[in-house]
Amino acid sequence: MDAKVLQQNLLELIRRTSSQLPTDVARVIDKGWRKEKKDSSGKYALEVIRENIGMAKVKSQPLCQDTGAIICYADLPAWMDEKTFKKAYDKAVVQATKIGYLRQNSVDSITGENSGTNLGPGNPTYHFHPVKGKSLKVRMMLKGGGSENMSVQYSLPDNRIGAGRDLAGVRKCLLDAVLNAQGKGCGPGILGVCIGGDRGSSFVAAKEEFFRTLDDVNEDKRLAKMEKQILKEANSLGIGPMGFGGETTLLGVKITHRNRVPASFFVSVAYMCWAFRRNGIMMNENGKISRWLYES
Image (cartoon, rainbow, N blue to C red; front, side):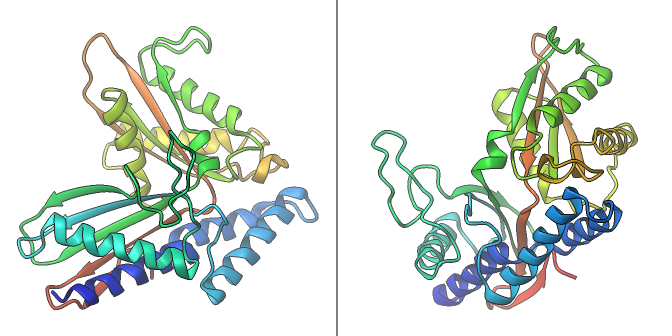
């Protein structure tokens, strides 16, 4: 594949991810707006969000000024290697930052200096996977700092909230996370959850749940039931959009699980704001984009 074609395709992926809300998310926001009471603060908040979504798409401007951490997943067929892909994606990130699709958002944790390019240790974050197919699959998300600050990890048992090492305890963790996030993290939010794993792998798996569409159904019937239960209970708490009150506190709940060692039982909760920026493409060796993954 021509390097310039790859870079331009990745630049377009970044542009759309930054400025266009996925179809499934916009649909749920519209549903929430219709559900909120007339002249309520919750309905007004969702109305502002809906207007923002429309303007960002038309103007190709970021949905939120905090374009967040850049997270990229690439499934690499035999004709694409990690080094070539990373070089093209890094160049696309720098170009997108200059244009304004991305905010200058990468800060050196030791010196406090901003590179101005969005490049640096750990940014972007890459996850590479070799695949047998012929298509290059690229998925990315932009995760804002406000929502990341509301992410949390529990170690069970947790006597503070009376949570034991079972699904009933997991439920208490998730509702506690929702309560602590109220008015913060730019709700209505989405929860990505992993039950089990170690401290690191659990959070990675929780974030990967954000690549599921909001209208899909968990293959694990136990977790599918819990997803519906938590969504219903959270939306009955009266927290509402931005914590203003109402019935739309969460837009979705996505749960997975990983095996754990006997001594540990972690529940990792990744919180995503309403500006749920994720997109993806399927690309062939000639550089043609055959499919956009989150657009209908």
